[in-house]
Amino acid sequence: MDFYLTALLQGLCFSALALGIYISMKIFNIPDITTDGSYTLGAVVTAVLIKQNEPTYLTLISVMVAGALAGALTGIIHTKLKINALLAGILVMTALYSVNISLMGTSNLPLINLPTLFTLVNISADLNHNTFWILSLFVIIITIIIGFLLKTDFGVAMRATGNSESMIRSLGVNTDRMKIIGLALANALTAVSGYLISQFQGFTDISMGIGVVIIGLGSVIIAETLINWFKITSIWLSLVLVLTGAVIFQIVLAVTLDIGVNPNLLKVVTAAFVLLIVSLPRLSFKKG
Image 1 (cartoon, rainbow, N blue to C red):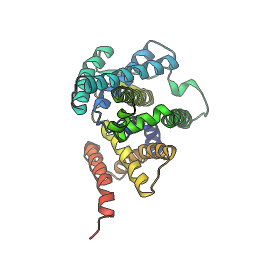
Image 2: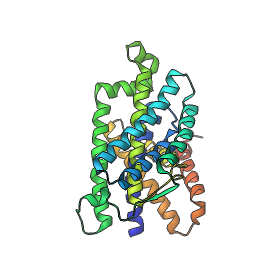
Image 3: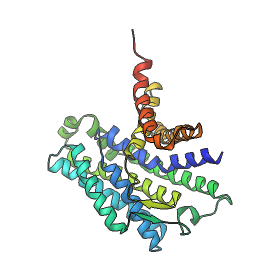
């Protein structure tokens, strides 16, 4: 049971990442590979500040600012230098590797026996249950903030930029600025996932972000599949399904390990699962 509880907790940790991917890929239609670097950046900033005994709230703010700067840089390269968004993300992600290793000074930083977000408040005597309640509250607050943001005039302009850039530009909206802010927000959320995961697993590693974009993408694809099946138009329900997708994704991986699949094949299973989710709607509703 604890094995699946751990998967649930990891899913909650990756919820912010899934929301970030949702904003960049589903709202702005931008395949943002900066994710791999900004996720690690969030974990690195977290580890460095915790090592220096900085307050948890200050660490979180610093993580979000660092992630936002990384996303904004990608947005500036894409919009102002007219570089393909995918290439812009790859360039920033590559640069972030050097930034991250420089900040850490080593390839791995342990956080064992150091105060973290999950030891800040004692809601339950059981550590896993305590972590669950703190994570749940944390994710709920983030989701409410993002939900309200997307319902504002600014949020509507963001969504319109992704749906019809030429139309919203004709109404006087600066679409370049919208993209930069959108990518900054998406990567700030991604960095928050790094912040949560590093504290949850008790260490930060320089390679922890490799391929993490597939986790966020898989979560969003699961959500999109459910949204299309049930014809959901509500922003709030869409965000809830994105969070649900993040949890489902981790549960599926937990089941894979539980039935005895070699952990070395986990990346293959992850890729196959995402491929299945992408293909399922087309296979299910294909006519004749």
